Length: 288
Ligand code: CAA
Image 1 (cartoon, rainbow, N blue to C red):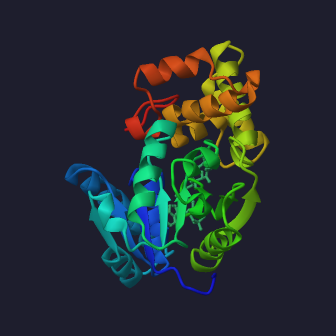
Image 2: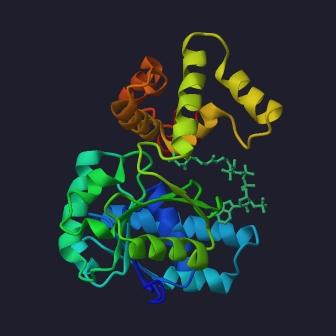
Image 3: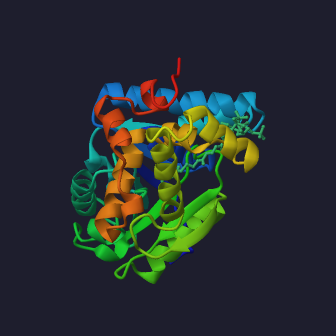
């Protein structure tokens, strides 16, 4: 039933997406338990969320008191077993099908409520592949948030052939009514709506640079000044993370065999070199 209020949420992973999802849930007065495998990763995740809450205060989006209350609603654990009582869990681990399916298999055995929502924030992996790792595939959906999560107001909701209508409705209700996000529904295909459009564009921009057709700066300037996008495709690739752009491209290529979705060699070399974009301090741009 959509009427049973979701008050206990779990988030798996506190990287840039998981941290953002945990933050918006805590700001929406929900009890949030975040799972990270080590104390160090948990501390880094908490610090990431607190920095973003501080930014919310300094930009006048939230008050000091709201920041304090949100921080109090966030707890961390290294044991997924602690998620037994969660009514909604959002998985936001690395964009790797093997890792995500293992998480879903474990999560399914831990979360007791048969109507709980088990959601993945995957950008590109078909949700059915994750649902099939569970015994109760009716609980599994995709809830795809956008980075920075506290700023961008959209969630792509992906239901599968096996998702129950009730679970889909609960997920939509939570994203819209509790988090205040706009929700669009997408069929269960690799890349959903946003990345099906975004990824060929990002990869085309990388190919332009790779071929020497235009510089990084000029490609980005063209798009931000000429088309009024908030940032150009290379800066955006750095923000998303070049390893993540590659992972999304790989799953979309696997599904469609569309040449525009294949990762160009420059992207592969940058990932191999550890240049992951903003998060590693170096991508198409340098970050201090
Ligand atoms: N909490 C609350 N508000 C915040 C915040 C936070 N942590 N961080 C920033 N903000 C607010 C700021 O206060 C500001 O609000 P106002 O406009 O009302 O003043 C607004 O967000 C913009 O922030 P800034 O002025 O600091 O920065 P900016 O104007 O340079 O914008 C940006 C930065 C929001 C990242 C903008 O450049 C942008 O939207 N870029 C595009 C990002 C994008 O396309 N993301 C999607 C990536 S794809 C994805 O995520 C999915 C996938 O599967 C790959």
